[in-house]
Length: 205
Image (cartoon, rainbow, N blue to C red; front, side, top):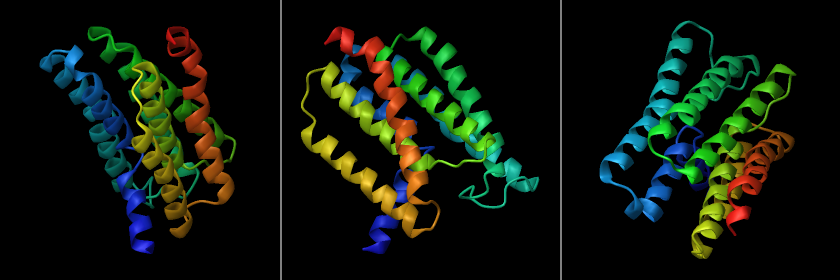
């Protein structure tokens, strides 16, 4: 059971979450786009949210700026979070300029706000769980897509809510976070997404 729970920590790694959100969105709404538009958006998301952050991580590790893969030290989180915030800003400002996708635009805007808030907390000496932040943003995104397209993803939403619990358990099991850090990460993931619903989701309801 412990191995099963710890598996969720890797499956829902924060770097994979934007890719999951993008794949889910195009699985639901892909029929409204040309294939080249889907490929363009997906490749940009993959490069900016996965490949470049991983490259930066190994660069910082080789320079001795990062010692732990889990970024347990608060100071080690500063550069990766700042860099990731800039990459998300590029994605929001430029990548969605060619293809207008309000659902993904506001999701990534919310994710950027969450990341900036996580960075601000680190600068003030506090740490939030990035795993919880990521998986809760994805869960809220799926809920928003369900409401926007009037599709009942009851089992999918239930799975991701359970996944939030498994991710929290795995982080506790690995002794990577305290309960307060997990709760803080969940709040960072949920609140910006819900706040942005008032701009794009609720007016269309």
